[in-house]
Image 1 (cartoon, rainbow, N blue to C red):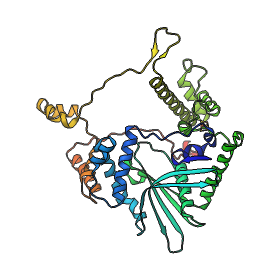
Image 2: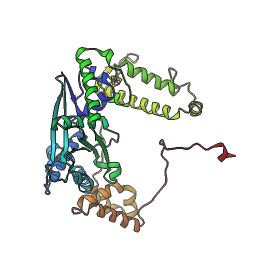
Image 3: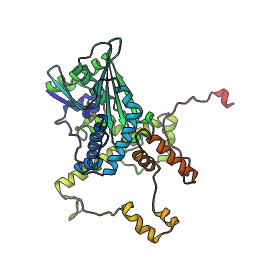
Image 4: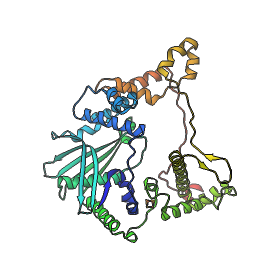
Length: 403
Ligand code: SF4
């Protein structure tokens, strides 16, 4: 039998060959970002359940993470919950939090996941709509439709939904609460979507159990970065080699005239493709470096063959950071306002977050806007223009526009 967790779904749904790995990767739960996320989820679940005196300090202490960050994440999540999310769950029914979900597809695949917020509404024409929200407290910003599809599928089977019913799943990027348009990605799944997901999973699971690798196509892409087969997968390394060739690699980058390469690729109309290839190569390199560090950390010093007596090793280093709150009185004693300004950096995002977090319920957005206005009136805000590169809609000029 195949076990498939929601967190692994984006990889498997993009490339069924990922199921042919020796093991499904574990979710990272020991690092500070993961623990902070768990603490924030716990606090948000309490809020959704009606608790208003949430001791974020105690929760943070329990998980060994920064209480300020948990408080800020709760404040941001609450802003999204009260401003947008709660409305869809406000139909008088029970709102479930941290709901463990599990279903079987046939008797060959067990699907599991946790719905952070789940409620069900039956609309007057008898259609059932299940609402699922998934808090994301990380800084990543990418579409999780495949993962959400798996949640939708589990909810569909679990609730025994029928033709015409729907599952609405929203990814909620808590840190982006400043703009609910950016912070909430909504996906609606119907019977047809669910059937597609189920048949795909069934097909992959059947092939994986029977060891029929040839029945499942390889589909390399960004999702490879989370695949346990990365590093040994031929399809992925072939695609990586193709990417390198696209950006002009011929064994070494030393001989490549980058300016001429960019000009030539731009003329061929494949600059965006080459740019993605360069980004992917960068990601592969980052991943490789991180794996090397893990290897050296776990196995100890690794001798360098062409440098006798030398080895790669992880060495302790120390870095000192300054606690602004503790440092403040000391700095004030020595520096005037101008000098203070040159050593302290103020983040507008953090100012807004803090103003929102300390304001009373329903006043958070107003408090954040008010402090920004006051800063602006005091001449404290400096606006500057910058450029970012991205794909945009484009109508090429017609010859008649040019001549
Ligand atoms: S590394 Fe990429 S292409 Fe290879 S099995 Fe994994 S997801 Fe598929």
